[in-house]
Amino acid sequence: MLINGEWRAGKEYFDVKNPYDGSSLDLVPLSSKKDVEDAIESAKNAFAVMSEMPAYKRSVILSNTSKIIESTKREISELITKESGKAIKYSLAEVERSIQTFQFAAEEAKQIHGETIPMDASPNSEKRFAFYQPFPIGIIGAITPFNFPLNLVAHKIAPAIASGNSVVLKPASYTPLTSIKLGEIMMEAGLPKGALNIVFGGGSTVGEWLVESQDLAMISFTGSPSVGKRIKERAGMKRVALELGSNSAAIIEPDADIDMAIPRCIMGAFSNSGQVCISLQRIYIHEKVFDEFKDKFIRTAKKLKVGNPMETDTEYGPMINEKEAVRAEEWIKEAVSKGAKILCGGERNGNIITPTVMTEVKKDMKVVCNEAFAPLAALIKYRKFDEALDMVNDSIYGLQTGIFTRDINKAFNGFKKLHVGGVIINDGPTFRVDHMPYGGVKESGTGREGIKFAIREMAELKLMVFNL
Image (cartoon, one colour):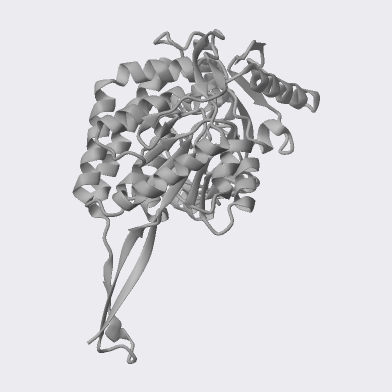
């Protein structure tokens, strides 16, 4: 545990294992309630320092963090792959993105400012002068998932530090080692002690202690909708930002460049074993190009190398554990029992699921209406563009949607009518870069990430008015 700038041992430990071969990677201490209370107290003391720190100093710390990550990117990439099972090529990509995330935060730290208000717009205040300014809100409780153990942590810590807040982080118990490494890096980068505290344990213990603490100003959570709802219920008056799940979709129009769409959809559906909140799960294909897309998609999916994530040509490795793989296998079997057809894949070997493509699915099947979080995609035929839009919207989720088309009118029509947080034209819903606003609607969450937009969530506007 990292508390007040020092690494603390624990009375109990848990084993972090490699999901590919089951080997033990390290023992990590379980945080007690006293440890969590100490972490919060440390963050409270550090907030007094961070909130007074000038922007250029916060920027330097974040820039230093970015540079140190870059200098150790191979080491961190291998660590991510070992503890999460992510293919090494995608772990490297995650580290590259994290380098950018901290650099974006370094730049945004110097752009936090308010505005003047034209008080003479009202006859009752024509002789007054006013402006507002954003102020840091306090301690941010960050609760993060296993699937992006560096960059999704960065998306909470970086804007919090940029805006002058302090943080208590609870990373996923499957992938705590990357957070430990990041804690070491940020201390080396010059972060004041207590500005980042890291605690370990389950959501029902450590997570709830953070959520229920009256000293925290905000909880930023990425994870499942069920846990997100519980956090919302128990957080009281503190701010809550929720990045939750999805069953993201893409629409393939008859004028689409199919050869361009195939590799983007393959990557979107199968990278990281489908364990991505914007993983491409539903592919709606116009009837005129359905067979062409289906044949090329299946042919490409069958060529994917699945297995050892440390090998550079592996597309994806294991799911995070065998329980999740069994759950995905059961969903596939349930769909087949209700009439769905498997076009390829559908097999399980331990915690690895082969690339699975299905058709003749129904909207109430779990592989369609729920978040699969597994390497599977359902191909669904449609006749009219508006019909496809309606099918995309027929979901409890609304994170991002991809539309492959050359028709600018259809692109804007989809942008207007789709009830999602982002519409990606001529790419899959899995596209994300780290300075764009990112978040969803419905059960996909509340609030927005992307450094500039997360800073807004982590700041409080304060107004000053002069009577002249």
